[in-house]
Every structure is written in structure tokens, then in C-alpha cells.
Image (cartoon, rainbow, N blue to C red; front, side, top):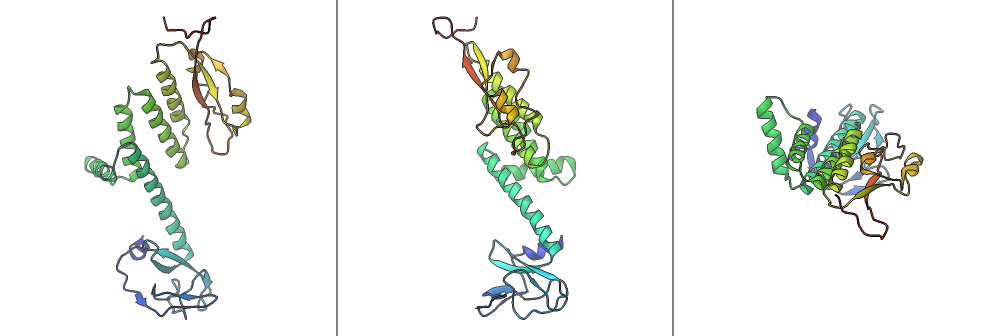
Amino acid sequence: MEIFKWLFGKDNKDVKKIERKESNDFKITEAENEALCPYCKNSLIKFPSRKTKCPHCNNYIFVRKLNDYRLKTLVTQEQVKELEIEQRKNYSKNSRLRKLKEFGVTEDEFIKRKDELYLKSGIEINEDNAFWSIFNELLIKNVADFNQLRIDYYSMAIFLHEEGKDNFKLLQLSAKATLDSFQLSNLEFKVQIVGCSDSCETCKKLNGKIMSMEEAYLLPVPCRKCTHRIGFCRCLYCAVSSRDSEGMLILKK
């Protein structure tokens, strides 16, 4: 991946000052890389402002902004694919760091955990492993806090889904933690399934259904057969207080 050392480097010897000038197909800016075709390395008359074809080798040249969008450079179609992969990785990393921050975990702590895992295993650890290691630690920390545990499991389910992996088990664990939190009350409860206005047809049939706690622990939701476009079931459990014939709340015996 030598391309990234060159593309994202702060010091680029190919950068030179050029007079500002524009045309329909090319644009010269105050500081750009030398206008060389990334395929054949022949010089171009001007620095392209958008995708163009090299007059020498007839390959398509792509223009991308780099170095925090301050510098543009010319890349091949293959390099565009590499850049897009790198951008997705950076987006995923930043998204996870923001999520960890919500749980009180700083970026420095994330980096420290990654280093600790490397020293422990002697193997280069990717950021996924460090991320899941921290979340697994949060699960242990919050094992008696069912409300927080519900949030932890659901956040993990979201990120697993973003990785293109099956998150159904984590959704079930989040739902179970919700039911466990209901059990902390000294009131008798039943459970109602709550769907969304745009739920799939299968989930709409479950919406509003009231059941006992015992039935709810069989976990009819999340629904494995959910076909919503987001890719997984969003149905939730809601506690419904039991009342006697006089409308009074019923306490647990």
C-alpha cells in the first residue's frame, strides 16, 4: 500500500506552486501535485479538475482530494478503489470512537487497549479486536445493570450489522436484558410488543400483542423473519402494569 504513504504524506516533493487558471476541462490551483498521468507518467498540459482521459495512453485519470482535502492528486482507477476502502475503514473507526466516547471510553484508552492486546499476543491487532475487547469488558462491568446492559448489547448489534454479520443473537440478549430490568420492580407486569409505523408485515402482526413475562422470555421478538429494509427487527418490549378489578396496581407476592 505504498500509494497511501505518498497520498497522505505531509511532505510531497511533487507539490509546486502554479498560477491559478481555469478552463472547461482543467483547473489549475495554487498548490497541486505535478500534472503527471498516474499510468504512463507523461506530463499533462494542465491539472485536471475532474475525471479525464490521458492523451498519451488513453487511460482514465481520476482526481481526488487528499491531506484533509487541501491537496488534489491524480490517481488510477485501481487506486480509487483502494482509497474508497481506506475511507470506509476510517469512517468505521471514527464511528466506533464516537460510540465508545458515549460509554466514557476515550481514543487514548482505545489505542492503549490495542497496544495491550498486541503485547499480550505478539500479533498485530486490528481495530475490530480492540473495539470488541472494550465492549466485552463493558458487559462484565454492567452485568448487574440491566438497563445499561440492554444499551451495550444493542450498540454491539448495530456495529455487527454494519460489518455485514448476523446480529440476531445480540438483539435477543438486548431484549432479554430489557425483560430482566422489568423484573426488578415490585409490581406485577405483563409485556406488550411495540413495533414501528413502517414495520414489516410480520412485525405488524405482533405489534400491540400483550403476554405474560414467561411468554416474553421465549423471545418472540426480535423477529427472525423481519423483512424491514434496515436489515433487522426493531420491535421492543414495553412493560404493562397489572391492575385488579378496582384498577389498583398489583404488587408481587
